[in-house]
Amino acid sequence: MALNDESLQELKAELLDELVKDKPSKNLLSERLAEVRSADIGEVLEELIEEDEELPAALAILDVLSSERAANVLGYLPGESQLEVVGELSDTQVLKLLEEMGSDERVDLFNLLDEDRREALLRRMAHQEREDLKRLASYQEGTAGAIMTSDYVAIASGMTVSQALMRVRQTAPDAETVYQLYILDSDGELIGTMSLRQLIVARPGAFVDDIMIKDVISTAVDEEQEEVARIVARYDLLALPVIDSDGRLVGIVTHDDAMDVAESEATEDFHKGMSIGQLEDGVSRVRLWSLYRKRVTWLVLLVFANLFSGAGIAYFEDIIAAQVALVFFLPLLIGSGGNAGAQAATLMVRGMATGDIGVKDWSKMLGRELLVAGSLGLTMAIAVTPIGIFRGGEAVAMVVALSMVTIVLFGSLIGMCLPFVLERFKVDPATASAPLVTTLIDATGVLIYFTIATAILSQL
Image (cartoon, rainbow, N blue to C red; front, side):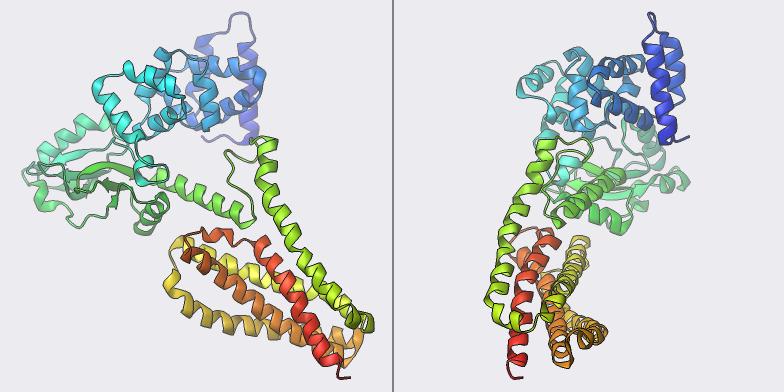
């Protein structure tokens, strides 16, 4: 049973109460932890590790667990917490944990270690494990190779169903998943795939080559991880095979790892969308200095960008002095333009992230946005016209209505186009953030509003 926050706190208190005794009972701790899922133990340990004085308690809990269970729990901890744990362990203890971890989690932890410790651990590993780890660690961060695992079930071309089932039984204990099987030729090239169900229900004497699916969905080892996650989600795959330039199978990306990537990419886009740099850890754990540094740059730049709004207002001091009622509508107009622009930018950025639209769709989206933004501007102009008449008369109402249509239309087009422009210049479209769009529209909105006001009201 999954534990809620209250149950997790009760478990944490129960474990600490036992550990503070003069002679803690390992049997009692072991029996209690056997009832708890690894993910929940990991959450308790994460809290203990964050409390500096409780790190020994976290290590004591890990010591109670078997090597296999401890490695599983360690995989649920964030990178910084993993480093704190292995920093207190000997090389022998770390090697035991690495041996029990899945190949993808093993390489993630290995890459976090400093160079000296990595070399020390590699020297003590078996040749095959060492070469596999070095190969996986060599792939560039953010690619399919960096998130794949080499723990999969491969079946040789030419095997019968009964032979393939024997192969599954032999390799299943170490495999990340056994529900999807991959058929390789003599050169290691991926030529087909099948599900475990297909294999089980097939006639024992049948050849796997006759029942396998030959149209295999795969990805290149250097493909971006975001695209990998998109493929897994689009085709609802349990795992996605990863091949090298020669078509040889080098690993698989499982569904859970792909969803972790999707969550990470979505979080990164949210942060960029609000002009926040990428955080190394969760917002509750990241250092205050890092949180300040990630937020301050764009905020300071946007402060200076807003000076253009002030300069625009100063330039139109005469018309403002003559029609003070215009000031009442200024926040309303530029706020509406900024909101419309932020909406358009968000829709485009998300559409690009999911693969729904690309740069080639720019002209199509421009036409659609012109119609939608024009309709939005007219609707908002109609809504604000009675207020304009009440506050400043018909002339001011006309200025406000025309300005509303123009600013909303302009803001929406800016918000729609900016992600395409950034994508064209190989910049992440998520940088077309709400603060950036609204700041641009603030400055231009002031100019549009008072230019229209000068043109109409100066004639009266």
